[in-house]
Length: 258
Length: 306
Image 1 (spheres, each protein chain N blue to C red):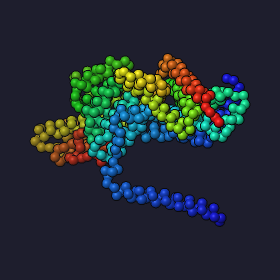
Image 2 (image 1 turned 180 degrees about the horizontal axis):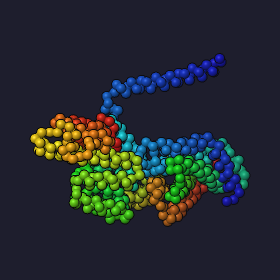
Image 3 (image 1 turned 120 degrees about the vertical axis):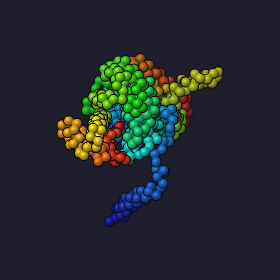
């Protein structure tokens, strides 16, 4: 990574961690992990299951919210505060600005995930009093969650490069929801014919497919995840994020900032 | 006191008082509303719709629905409710969301199958639940065991019980007693010892405290039922031999060659009523007993979860 990108990334990270909303969201996620212990107590025989399910869902959902709400303001806030002009007046290319912002946000989310995951493991230790070999599978779920965040970061940045924060949030969140139904969309495409089939198939491949990243339920049941899936999900997240980021760079490159 | 401080104190007081008042009024309003308004409702009843709405977090939603099923059953069981209308849908949603949630099948079938007030009295839906569980977890021998258990205990369908135990015995790592049960069904179905074997197996193969306690309660009830049956037969024999009923348990024991006064599993002597009936002295301590209960007796306390 060149030094200009790393400078923008570190500044983005510093700016993001100063945001109080971020701490509130992390605190809320940790609170939910703690609440999982109580939920387990009022149920029967699912203490560990509910800690893993609720804990990882909190990490995922709050991470998505953080990614969207920080991501959508990354470009528009710089324009609004006019700091973008100061940055771009220096020898910084527009694409470097976008890529730097992406890495800064990705780093913020990785650090957040670390702290939220710590909460999940603490709650798990409180319930089980020990860790077993199968608990290591939680790291796979966390890795997939981070891959999901990378895609959402790139999408938030893409929308932020041409739209207002409010619309960007709506677009990004809608894509997150649509992405959760991507497999249904593909099944629907398989049932149709002609142009509808082409359109539905195209849309199914265009929207992000988040269902492949969600292994929380199977990991809660200590079912192993295939190495092939880890490899393919990594590649998919890389290419999809790269695609969205390229789109953001293209739009931002030609945006009239006057 | 400056004006800012005064405002803070007044506002705080008003806030606390308003909260207390609104809670009080709401509580009164709840008492005025007809009970039907406050009844539990299943707003979404389609498992497919709920699965889609969970946005992929179906494991968590399954845990929530399972907890809801437990709470629903526990609350109604505690209040001696005559019906459990939402129990089957709640369990169906839970297992549809997470077909590998074994606990929902195991406990679910024991919530659904027994007759009220011990359970929902829906053994057919318990069978359907177990079959769905087996379909999704064919390598879990306990599900076959639980299916056979429902067939045997609740439906008295010994043929299907035998088949369930037989199928379960072929599952890898199945407990050896599955084969024994399959054989027992063919030869000794309906006998106390078969039921005792089933409950003993349940006790020995589970780590769950509630299931163990429940097995203990059923084993105690089985022993009491068997004792009462034998003592009642002894009373009949005594009557046929002497032409009158025994006047006391001591007289019956002496005539039958029983050492001492027969006692129930709690160590309390059985009662002999003037009309020759054998009864439990404290029937409320045996919620699953079917014999030796005073006429019209219904357990008034909370029986353990079946």
